[in-house]
Image (cartoon, rainbow, N blue to C red; front, side, top):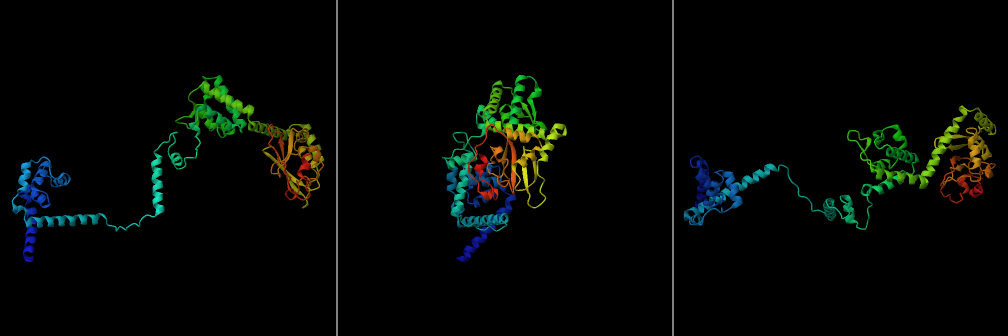
Length: 439
């Protein structure tokens, strides 16, 4: 029995080999036979070859995709089903099994050639990895979504995950009037920028056809000195100044809108009238200019030189021993002077020393136009009653062994000064209470 089965197998293999070698003589019948050996019915194989023009590979793909063709009549189907029993013998079954085994072997060899590197099985994902993947999926889905208020991207993700958090609108999302007012308030601490912008807008308003006033070069020294302040570029953008395509550093007025210019001029004028920051910094700029002129006056004025020499004659000689300690005084924003004083020297000696640099300093301190403040105090307390403490020693007023004073103008909107009394260790041994110096 086993010998008979082996003979049938060998005969089937030889039949398959013979059918493939005789394809040159009867190619069509050989292709039909080969497709039939794959498990398809003869009528299906003939129809597939007819549809694909005899292409064996396309016929095989067509059979795998369509199966039983719809165009075959019932008679041909009945003829196929009524095939003699000799076509469905055990030999044909064995041939089909052998062919299927060969196909499976060939496909496995191709897969091995493609995947030359061995693959290692991944460990199952942890709970944290799954949650991270879910969160990433939610973020990617939310990036394309737009909320009801027009927010999208990462802001939409934040709104989706934290609905109670309110994200402020960007500056570009406000209307033009609000943008102009916000930018003007941001420029307020820079009085030079406010004045320059206001003067420029009024010039353009008075000469609307002159293109010379409608172009701003942001690289010039004048722009960097007067308009290089936070909020200036946003303000100019709101006034319809936009960078040129070929010169992005040059701003050009795109549209001269009278209403927009009216809003911009009104906003800057309101800053000049009501902003405490503008008024204080404007006073500081004026003070710095006065100090600079006063310090240079001795070079051209003989009377000023005589006054300075008189003040210098009242200043004690600088200590050359270890007892002396440096006293530093700031005069304006750009000038700082320093020298040694002893602890028993008085504040009047320091004022006379300041008069030796500019005679206007003692007179303005006496009139109250300028003030002398203690930089060692965290709130920079001014000596409101300078006359009452001029005869006090530097140790008593807390300026020895480390003294830091500053000459400042009287501001239109002075900040509130605290009343906390400093401990004597902070201001030096022997220093008097702060409240005694403010009376």
